[in-house]
Length: 260
Image (cartoon, rainbow, N blue to C red):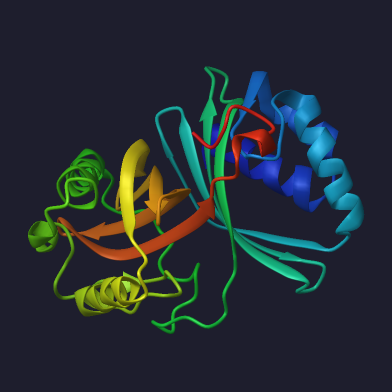
């Protein structure tokens, strides 16, 4: 495990799970800590101000980092949280930027309530975790970039099989079934309910080996949302997908410069 991944994990586990809020944020962040988690202000004091009351009102914090990878100065983590023995359960995806000393200097996250019942029967976090195909990192990142440019943002849905495998597409979005058939059925059901959805802008794309994660601004019925999508790629096609979705709050409720 690299030092930057270790620092990101320890900020989570020591600072939030173990409740050593000030000690961890001081130890694992750099000379700035720019924050995009909407309710948290920038810097060490912003982190302490938010998380000290959180650990006091939530004495039982079971936090599991399911996946982690790095790309240059960036770190991605995929996290499951069980708060107060099931009182609340969350899935979080976080992206950290680090400095030349591997200390954290910027943070983005998306948090969504964990849903037990899913269309596919898979959980929101299960599936492979091992990083493979390190020699294909740039190729896989390019695949996802093109998928966004041509399909998700470009709207060329007839090109979807250029990117998603027709043989395997394991789905972890709780509302979507496996395969392209499951994806198509979900889109149809949304249309029948009068729900429109579109990807507006891709802000961050990072990857390592067979995993690529993206942070995007999306719209659902003209309301702004932030998505982090995680893709697993095999033999040049997307074979598995996780996502975390969060509605963007009105600007007067931000504690910082916003989700992006």
